[in-house]
Image (tube, rainbow, N blue to C red; front, side, top):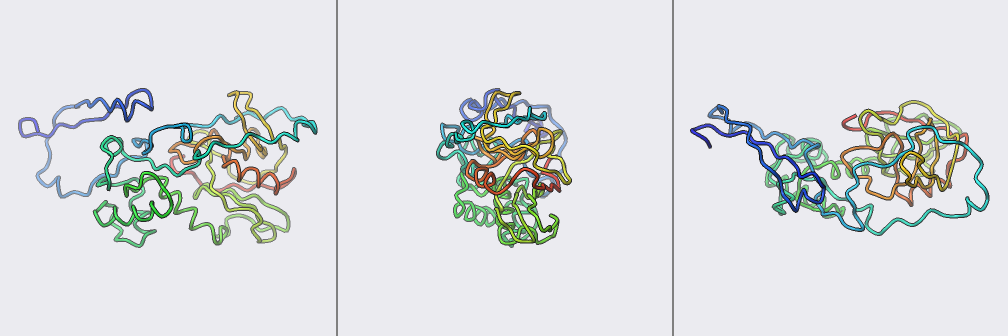
Amino acid sequence: MINGRIARCRVRHASGVAGVLVAAAVVICLGAGSVAADTAHQPPTAVAESDLVPGVPPGPGQPWQVDTPDQMLAPKVYRPSAEEDAVEPKAAPPGIYDLVEYVPLSDAVAKVSCSKLTGPYQRQIEQWLKLKVDGKQSASDCKEIQKFQKSHKIKPATGFAGPVTWYQMNFLSAKKNPNARKNCPVKSYRVACVDLNRQVTWVQKAGKVVFGPVQMRSGRKGHATRAGSHTVYWRHKNHWSTLYNSPMPYAQFFDGGQAFHAVYGSLYTTVGSWGCVNLKLGDAKKLWGVLKKGDKVYVWGHRTGT
């Protein structure tokens, strides 16, 4: 409070991600402005997804991965040798696919036990949990969200309505009947279905699901995974990104440089890939055994923020 006015402040993150929690933040006051007397009674503004940080510090099993090194451009197609195909991609480090929620910086620094802040998916999560849908965090909301997070091993379980919690709810909703809304065409042949809305993918044939659904991560803003009907035109088990000098295990290209492939990093980030459909290593390996060259891929919807 400055001379009866409340200063408006912004948090500027330290440049290194490790410094976000360790070095805390530089608070820059932008000046004082008049505030109406009933401000305290207005609904709280949800914390923007772009202002969130991983709620668990980085480590060998859980690096803070901002993006993935996808091919972007169409690769050079060739026939891999039998010796090359015989080599399996390296295993993923333990814990690398753990569900780590993104939380406000203030919650992460203070290590809160139950968040009082309204998350970007507050209303959707309230509806999914059958709570009072008002888009405002409450003590009872926090406890119910926290209970869900603990039961599904989402860390930290602070009851914050973040993207990873909502991501997991979408996945659970899709598991029983992923094509309930008939968004993916039912054909007599295999079709790989890529649902950008819920960030899940599966393969179906004649209406029967033969793979998945599994969680995925699609393209970020400006590099969205392209919607429409595509065809798997090249498969390369041990593909290496020539642009980023990084692995793309079990790559199955279906549209230019866009492909299904595994990543050695978290799928649960607030930004997407450069257009590819990222999968956990085990899921990418299983999909490799299901799809074949010439199979159809159908993509629809929009990733949040794209």
